[in-house]
Image 1 (tube, rainbow, N blue to C red):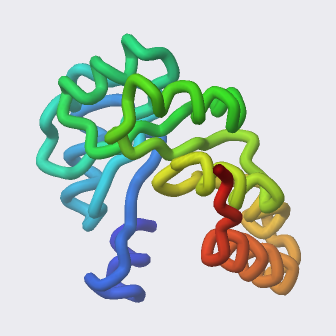
Image 2 (image 1 turned 180 degrees about the vertical axis):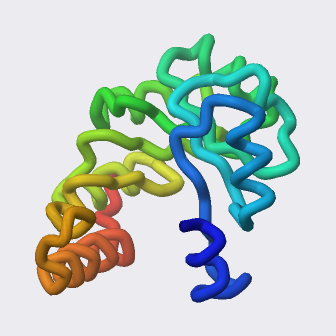
Length: 156
């Protein structure tokens, strides 16, 4: 599927592969045209892979381990909420965090205002579309997420 998407979308679109947990999966994704990898946890065998890795981490120890392993950003997973993101930014002010899991369109601005580099969304965006559902509803949800990401509310 990734090869087909790469062919259709070309090289200008960043395509990543998620839930990568082994070196073999990472190498296969890279060979198929992935531009980055997403893991659910710190995966030591992916340390310093040839592709950028968005490593899943939650605790300070996991964040440090992910950074030591060469992660380009930290996927806060499952996201414990915006309060945790604000708190963890204190000891890690320069780490790009991407909250994932339970982020809906109403949370996007809040997470970005709290210092998230991006947010990851799944079912709140996709809905039933991957199973033959309403593609027009998907377009509407995608537009709402993009609008929310483009106009963050800044907090003090």
